[in-house]
Length: 89
Image (cartoon, rainbow, N blue to C red; front, side, top):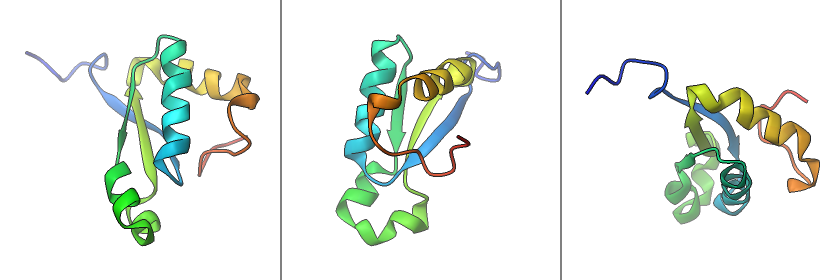
C-alpha cells in the first residue's frame, strides 16, 4: 500500500491545552464528516507539566481535509470560548 500520496498524509490542525477541549473539537469535526485524531493527550493528562514540552494536545487530520477543518473552526465560534494555540484569527 502506497502511503506517499497526499490523501493519506496527516497534518496537525492545531494544539490545545487539554484533551477535553481537543475532544470537543474532534466531535465537532466528526459532525462535519471530517476524521480527526489526537496525539500527546495521554502525556498531558498524566503529567500536565509536560504540556509545553510536547506542544499541547495535537489534533491531526488528513491533509486533504485540512482546509475544511480550518473552515469549521473559523465558522463555529460557539464551539468553545478559546482558540487553538498558534491559530491565526
